[in-house]
Amino acid sequence: MARKLVLDCDPGQDDALALLLALASPEEIALAAVTTVAGNVPLELASANARKILELAGRPEVPVHAGCARPVLVPLSTAEAIHGDSGLDGVDLPPPRLPLASEHAVRTIVRTIAEHPPGTVSLCAIGPLTNVALAFLLEPAIVPRLAEIVVMGGAIGLGNVTPAAEFNFWVDPHAAAVVFGSGAPITMVPLDLTRRVRLNPERLARIRALGNPVARACADFLAFYDARCRARGDGEGAALHDPCALAWLLRPGLFRARRARVAIETEGRFCRGRSVVSFPADGDPAEVRLLTEIDAEGFFELLIARLARF
Image (cartoon, rainbow, N blue to C red; front, top):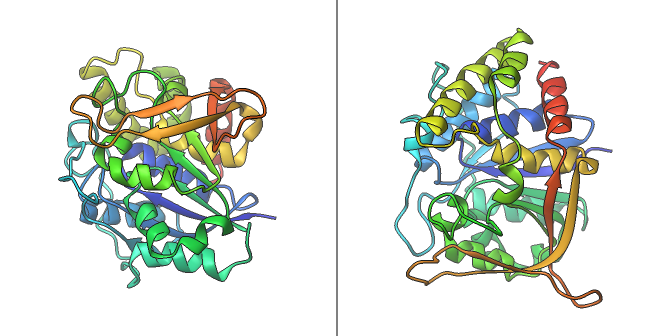
């Protein structure tokens, strides 16, 4: 049976690819809602981009709920330097016809988890954790009802915004601290893992060669994303951070994981947004499943097979 999923995102090319991976996998994922948050781009653009992708995929029935336009306590920082002014630069998609759903994303998260039996709804958060944190604070009773929350964020080693911090946690460290302190069943997808899943010319060519309109659009916006990353000094190619979170839900056998404790630094002058990871001794409590290894070739086989379905 397909798992009920709420996808919280801030598209972003890699978010868009993650959303398409979910849409192409109805046997495993029943997408209840897409919720958007300010992060890679401001909220209005993130919400428009999510609707553009749903329309590209022919799935206008999936509702998009706009959420928080800024972090909990700090000013918003965005990532147009990587994703372009629209967040989806590289492809020319028409303005969305699909209207936004009227319910705020935070209330959508609360309602969806509350109205289904315990353990039947998963939450995948691939942007800053503002919406999720406020949902947990608004209605703490939803936390033990979750089947799982998969979070793309954080790092054991170097960050990608500062040496200490990964982008999603750096944008809203206080929200990340709330979520990781909530006791929710978290699977964390850190930079240390996602940096092993890199675009290269051969992989881009395989996506483009699929020939369908969705795959061609993906190849276009991924080529832009890859070029931007390389121009900013990442000679290994763009890392596909967010689709790794969806791949975990679809094919956990592609990954290895360890149990860990994770705390979030909120106030440090140099370490704002740092995910402080420790590995307890066997038998000691650990709140987080931390993904540590991925079969990158297996990931791309999965991705290309699912994009071929459109």
